Length: 343
Image (cartoon, rainbow, N blue to C red; front, top):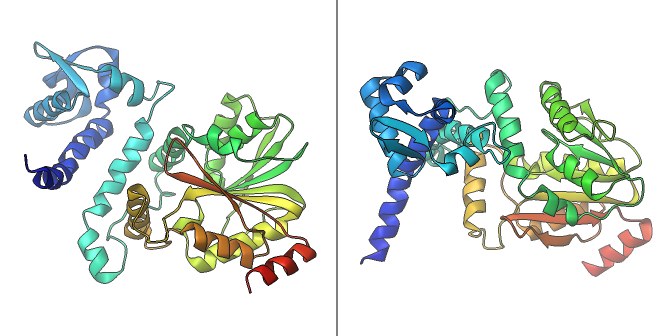
């Protein structure tokens, strides 16, 4: 067997497989079939699609083990019921729809690389489309909640800690931090249009008395004063280095002496070629919105030191490619010692 050829063909045909998943999700096929088995004609009628093309799509879904077929009727597999239907507690349905939407700009990658500009007609910025916004915020929550508790395990906080979760989305990490630290309170700083989604998620977790949501723009607004910790999760990689310096600087100003800055995200190794997921994540940010560039751990550590933080402690999240950096706001004596260390 030619394993090299198999590797190349698998990558080339992987786009076909992904598009079947995305289309089944976008047409709400998994939701339709969660109610009862249906024929291709019934699915086409209910989803407003072409009957013959729908049959081809459903058959491909069977081949990919997302659907089953008995006679002329199709149904969800257990995998689809667990991960691709919105009612499941393990659902990734919204996240998959976002990935499907983001796949369209990726088709323009060649032109992106030629010009250095993001793909034309990109869908990455979302505030004009309420469904897209909800899918994005709640889809990232679906994805992140699988590692959030582990991230929180790497964050030690003092008793009665007050935390600012910058750009906290649906509150995934705020919820995890409150579960880890029963007397902590968290303020989520997010765009006004996201706040109802965050409030709903926080209420479902039973933490509305400990997690508040405040409208704000992390590119310009302050992050509070005298707080115990500031959380930056998956923010720095998607903004310019100048914006990153501003964000980290405002985090420093918000913290009390000895307060902690927690940076959670996907970091490249020093060669910038590993891990594979992070190299693709880095390219995705450029393709979708033309800004940002993934950091190596060393680059992020330098950014934090230059803003007045100690050398970060680095934690690898076992369940994924995510890494957590935890640094403290220096006292004047610590600043002098750190400057001497790195001279």
